Amino acid sequence: MAYNVPMKLDQVDLTILAALQENGRMPLSEIARRASVAPATVHERLAKLRRAGVVQGFAVRLNPRALGYTVTALIHLRTGLAEQVERTVADLRAIPEVEEVHVVTGEYDLAVKVRARDTAHLQDLLVSRIHRVAGFIRSATEVCLTTPLERTGPVVVIRSERNDPA
Image (cartoon, rainbow, N blue to C red):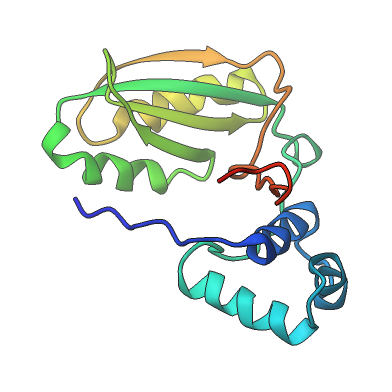
C-alpha cells in the first residue's frame, strides 16, 4: 500500500483551513482578512489544497435527530472474507443507514457506525441487512447513549510563530 507524504502547510494554509472548518461557506474575502493576504491568494491556496487532497470537498452536515434518526450504534463485524473485505464494504456501502466503515484489529474485522430511527429499526437493520453482507459470521452491537463529541476531521491548530519552536 502506498502512503502519501503530507503536504507542508504554512500559517496561511492553516488559517484558511481553520476558517473553513469554522464555516465552510465563509467568503474568501473574510478568510483573506483573517490570513492577512489578498482574496486571490486565498483562491490560489484553496485550489492548491484541493489538488493536493487536503481539502476533499464541501458538504452539508445534516442533523440526524432532526431527520428522525435518534439511535446511533457501533456494530463490530466478524467476517470470513478478510482477503475480500472490499466485497463486504461494498455491501455495507449500499445500506443508507451506514455512515462509516473501519477495518480494525482485534477480535472483529470491521467497525461500522449506523443511524436508526429507533431500536426496532436498528434490530431490523441488523437482522435483514447487516447480518446478510458478504462474509458475515457474527456481530456485537453497542448503542450510543449520547454523543458528546463528533467531528468530521482533525481540528486544524494555528501555531503562533512566536511560541512554536518548530
